[in-house]
Length: 291
Image (tube, rainbow, N blue to C red):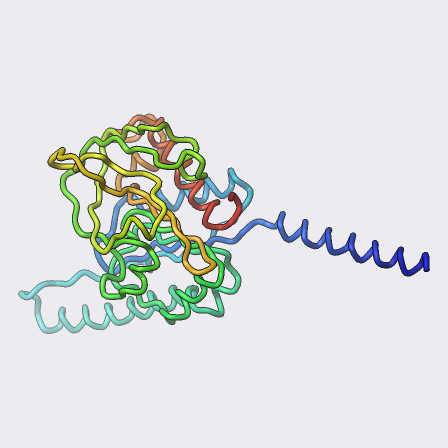
C-alpha cells in the first residue's frame, strides 16, 4: 500500500515538473515582414527592435520571414524587348524566392510556433494555405498585426474578419493624443490615460465593428479635421481560441527607435520607449504569456 501511494505521488510530482517546464519554455514567434505592395523603410528598424524585445523579455524567441534580396525594378514602357524579357525572368525568380520564404506559414511549419506577427506587411502575400493559416490561429495561437498588417490581403474577407479591421486611407502625418481604453491590458498598462504622439501616420479603417473587438487606444478627434468622433488606433480580440492584437502605429522609424541621435527625429525617445512597451505587451498578451 505504501509503495502504491509513493508511486502515485511520484507520478503527480513528475506531472507538475513537466507542466512547470512547459510553461517556462519560451514561446516561439514568427515575424513576417515581406511585402508585395508599398514597403516601409522602418521595417529593418522594426525587426531589430522586436529582436531586442524578445531578448529583453526572455519569454519568447523570434524567427523571421524576410523579403528576398534584389527585388527587380520594372524598366518601364520605353525599355527594349531584351530589357523587358530580362525583367520578366528576374521577377519570376524573385517571386519563387518569396513563395519559398513564406513556406514557413504552411500548417506543417506553423506547428513549431506559438504566434505569428505581420509587421508592416502589404499586398497579397503568396502564403501556401490561407484556410490552414486561419485555422491555426483559431485553434489557440497568437496573431500580432502592426501598422500595415491591415493593408494586407484586401481581397480576403476572412483575414479582415480575423484582424478586426481593414486599412482605408491615411492623411499627412500629424500629432495625436491616444486615449487609453484599458490600463489593465499588457499592451496599454504602461501608457498614460492620454498618450501624446508628436508625429505619426494615422490610419482610418473600413470593415471595422467596435462591438467585435476590445479597443485599447482610440482618438476622440479626427486626425486631420479635428472633428469630434471615435477613431480606433489599437485593439485586441479573440478568434476562436486564438488571440489577436493589432496596433496601427509604427510607421515612423522614431516610433520604434529610441536613439536620441536618430536623424530627423520628431518623436521624443520617451514616445519610442512607450511604443516598444506597447508592442511588447501586445505580443506577450497574444502569446498567452500575460493574461
